[in-house]
Length: 175
Image (cartoon, rainbow, N blue to C red; front, top):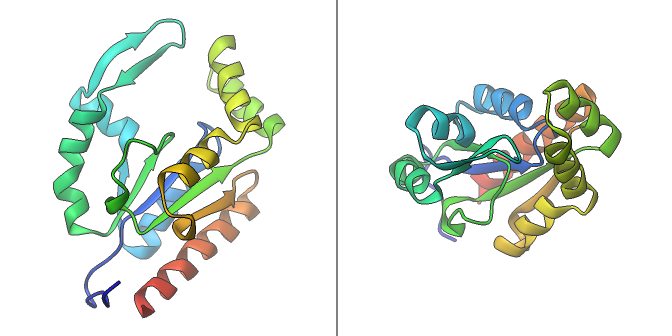
């Protein structure tokens, strides 16, 4: 990889099961590193990048192509922290680091219950975390040396995760 220019910033993906702690982490990372926070779920809702609505899971189905078309020019600039609960459809070239936030099932259950997830959606997300689906998806979709696991159970975990991302960024700038 060639040396990054001083003003060039990488793009970072923060992914993980809903409720794992991605938003808390993204907000702070974006603020501390002066990155743009791109919350894909929020963008999809605001821009109506929705194919249909899944009544069974009580959630919209993302139109991935429309989202990616929207993100492409933003990603080309660099300096983005992208948040989404999936990662396998994003182009590998977009990210210099992929951080997967994980969370113990009991904590995750409580968080999702608090969000009023229906039983089917709740069970599906807990199962996803039990089997490490998002982490496996990230490892299958990106080079192993750019995929990192972060813990999202407590505020202390979040602070460690923020330090981890900031340390990664410092190392990236030295390349």
